[in-house]
Image 1 (cartoon, rainbow, N blue to C red):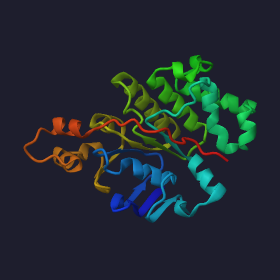
Image 2: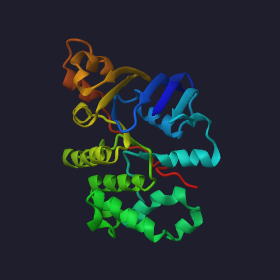
Image 3: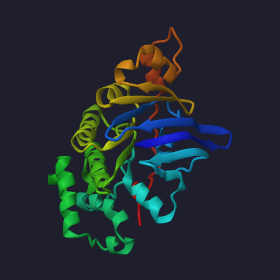
Image 4: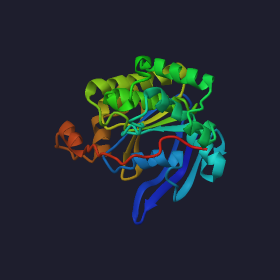
Amino acid sequence: MLLLEGVSRRFGNLAAVNGVSLSVEAGSFVGVIGRSGAGKSTLLRLINRLVEPSEGRVSFHGTDVTALQGRALRQWRARSAMIFQQFNLVPRLDVLTNVLIGRLSHHATLPSLFNRFTAAERTMAVESLDRLDLTAHAFQRADTLSGGQQQRVAIARALMQDPAILLADEPIASLDPRNAACVMDSLQSINRESGLTILCNLHTLDAARQYCDRIIGMAKGKIVFDGAPAALTPAATRQIYHVPDGEDLSESITSTIRRPVRQPEIAVATA
């Protein structure tokens, strides 16, 4: 179980995440929704320790994640693999090599840079690509793929980290509806077939309702909704997105959603 206890993160006077307590059962698919700036991305980065908490505690199966340092912290970042909106692939490398990069946390860096991956790891990478219907593109340059294909390559790379939990930060925000559905179908299949815990920030209510077992709604750094998709009533939705009674709910939610282009981030842990 993933457990957050009174976790906060402040940037100056701004509390991006404010006293969040949350438990996530193993094998669940949890969607996190809310306005831009509600604290969704910061919450995932606190779990992965890409952002340090100002206060509170994160633990996983009894291990105090907030106390980890050095190699133990790098191992945790491998076990809590992250997928970002901007796919963070190496454009000039082929798809197979991009997927193999997910094994960097299991190697000394120098041998990996010389492409010295084992036969077993190459087989594992091909199996990951096959799982995501990308085998035919294994030797194609990453920058020649569609956005949806690149995001599935990023998922395959994350699986190479042998994660215990997958953290997806708006993985479909930059995709068209068809590619977005393909990516979400892939995540749902991984969750159901492997029992991998997935915590996913989403910018659309429809995707959260369709794919997630549980929905967390955030507003101003706090959790204001936590329940099954069926419990996400119009009243609860108005609270999450700060839509007053009398205003059109769908139009107001759409106007609060921005799709920022984020700067590239480190997506895999290195040894």
